[in-house]
View 1 (tube, rainbow, N blue to C red):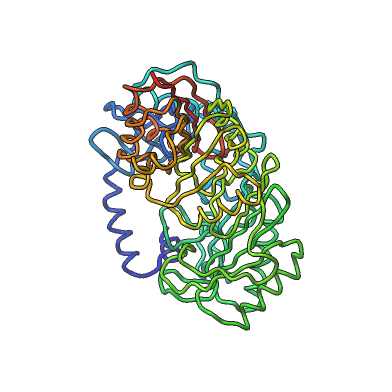
View 2: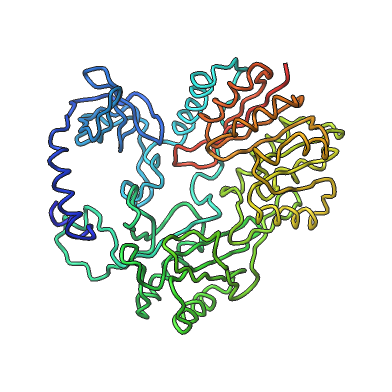
Length: 490
């Protein structure tokens, strides 16, 4: 264990804090033969301690029976991890990924997909009932994904000059000369990167590109980033694919080194001539976010295209687009069906992003008004609408709780239907108040967080009845789930 700390700590102070923490952890409890009865928030298993408190457990599947060592104690619950298994669940399957258990990205890869869907459905129902406390119709069974691997259209990988050693590597006693990594952050550790050999989330040539970039950079002495010291050349690699077969690659450099930058970019372009858009960023600031950076197109064009029902959507390096293209199409079809458009309605699309839903429903509406806080997204939405010859959709930039005002409604018309797809935090209370003030006939609420969705539904409950509920699985092998709700005015 001491070797693990020496390999995976940045400095002596972190080693000291580790040993102090060990002293505290030694006081933590071990509960014998706990049955895991359910799956809960953030994909953790749920069991019960002898004193009646709930235990949220890592690395288990419902149906497992295991000894649990607690890592945190609170008034009403414990957090813990399984240290010894007495019985494995019949819901278990063999994970396909060699990085499972260390990476942390696909926490449910050891659970059969049919059971993943079951627990996602239960999460939505529990949140709507317990948090929302609203009357529900019969909830439609969750719509599963046809592809349960290689379904993502966007992946971001980080470089590190001091890669995370796995427990197997530490226990092997070997010395590892290759300290470079190109992969994912270890959960909860902002400066620790696990080197990834093969990821099962994005289809080829994603793995080939990532592995080539790492090998070429290592062979040519291009330095990998050190987040603690803020030094090194290579920071991140982003790969975007589309259902049209187009491919975007973006490499983020910490500082400009023209010779080395061009050496790597030219090598990538030569090895993968199918790349549609090869771009780079010089980012000298403390974090990796791109949104305030200049993205420079090195070869090809500065965007790729996604397509849906004949509509084209321009995707640049900063664009938001649903990361599962195939399931996004299913999600949008459900949204359009729930809206039940006849052709004479004014539709407001709140939190419109790049206007994908707005344009998707526009041909069945009289007029669609999209509102979004990110200016670049609205620029994309307007360009896409013009390209798709969608003439009955307009897009506006603004903070939702401010721009969605009485004067805005007076100018653009009373909405018959509101479609809302807010971020994980849900809708701001001022936005909900404005919806209640205008009382559209129907609301279609798309959410990536059914808990905040349920909270918002409870605030609308006096005026609206939930008539349809449809969970959608966008992210197989994870605990995340989307949910679409239709509300009709009472």
